[in-house]
Length: 292
Ligand SMILES: Cc1cc2nc3c(=O)[nH]c(=O)nc-3n(C[C@H](O)[C@H](O)[C@H](O)COP(=O)(O)OP(=O)(O)OC[C@H]3O[C@@H](n4cnc5c(N)ncnc54)[C@H](O)[C@@H]3O)c2cc1C
Image (cartoon, rainbow, N blue to C red; front, top):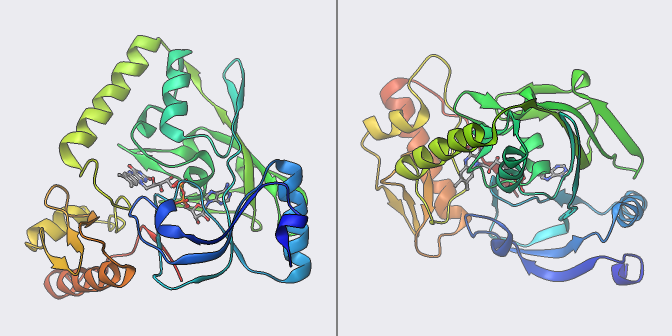
């Protein structure tokens, strides 16, 4: 199909996904589409359903590891921006940057998203992963989500119909988020911003900064030390495979040091899991999403 005749948004053929992931890894996608509007996305979903083409949604690509091979199908990158604030209720479009938005709300005296300062995801990706930090996560403030289902039908789910878990979100059906509604609380902008600054300082002191990563690789196992501490205790910091390396700053991060491939990262992941299982009989579960 000639998508450019059907869709108003930007269409790129053979787009390298390494350009759209924070870890800088990924083969080329057959099609990379940025819908021009909600209507455009609706049309696209209808066409995809009819044609049977497969698709995958990429937000800011900060929790993803694509394979080095070609992605056979379509990548949809919703860049919808904008928001409305009514008292303590905020409706935000899914392409907004979580951290920037948390700062913007803080300046307006709206609290509840401080923990998100420094999480580099989009609003859509953050809801899908129930992003969180410092003991808080997005599900605490989400009241509903809006989007399109696989046929392009408008859909709204109140948070009571969403099953939020540790870095995961289960919905009654597959959906591409277009908007998210949050309920925040009032606070003093100075105090909210100062809490955020503390979180950002802590991040900068304990996590690799300005390095290509996909955030934490593993979820923290239940009833044990956090994954990073286990990996550090096992003396795996600095472990290298190809261009990938276990970060010396925070052991639960893998850095793309020298043009690492997905195979390098996955090889390192298996190496770490084996070591941790041998030593502590703990199965580390991936926090990043691997897309083949
Ligand atoms: C340096 C660094 C620090 C990080 N720190 C944290 C942290 O403290 N806490 C934390 O939770 N995470 C952290 N992360 C991981 C990541 O930022 C979060 O998981 C983030 O919420 C992912 O958002 P994204 O837009 O990048 O989503 P992507 O990585 O693009 O996608 C993640 C998932 O969401 C889906 N998705 C994206 N947009 C939409 C949409 N509009 N509709 C439907 N599905 C969608 C994708 O298909 C995919 O399944 C960190 C990452 C990095 C690189």
